[in-house]
Image 1 (cartoon, rainbow, N blue to C red):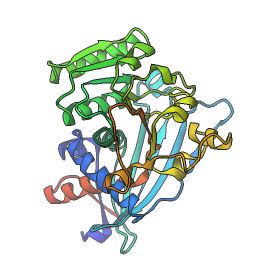
Image 2 (image 1 turned 180 degrees about the vertical axis):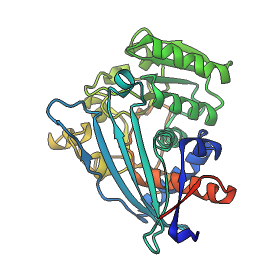
Image 3 (image 1 turned 90 degrees about the vertical axis):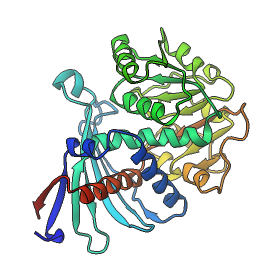
Image 4 (image 1 turned 180 degrees about the horizontal axis):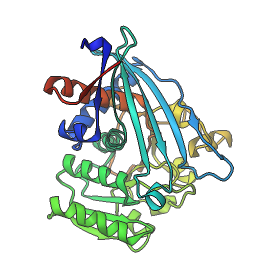
Length: 337
């Protein structure tokens, strides 16, 4: 069966077997995607959200289509099609998010691979926090706070612990203390030297963090500026957690992509519509810092917030990295087209 008349299918198990459960591969792939983004060697249409029952629906109930092309040495095109229902865990005993990534050869635009997307999606988001922390957190930071203790938090913290051996303490908060305890137990097995603190409330967790990571499904902000310590770096993964004033008062606001951040009534978009924030007030897009076009952290005092909407180029770069390994190691299932 010739490559052009078949696609390679990779299940979640296949991806794990190829190293897709550890952070190194994603840090490499996402760094490449961010650099190409900064060099404008990419195409990334704004992602449409498919929502049903928008009126009574939850913010996390949607399917998002995320197409992208990335250039560089080994160009590739693709699409992430990712669905989420907030009550999947409670009502159906399923993970909240699921999906597929399709890769296309840009020469013929033929599809070359289809793979499970939720693991890649979560791990590439964790890689964004790792890369953000490299450039935007205080050098030698030791204490991390994590808000929300679900699947995404697990990937975020595992990636951070893999990449920053200096971490000594992780402060966890979840509205469900059981979830926080389960996450602490899970991580303690691999990192017995790290102290895991289950915070009694959101405030005490945030105040303890030199790095603060948000992994919740909230649709209302609850983190005010005064909770953040001097020199804090906030990786605002779940987007809706910090109050508007944090964006105004922070020393630096960084996004992954300005056009993506400034839409859909997200916090930055609300501030822009109110005339309180603008492209000029933005410090940088993250890729600009990676290629040296903009500075990262410049003092231990700065409060810096990274607001990453998540970009298709990150998924497609990560999927390509996994696809390359799969072809080299002859993993996965060939399906006729």
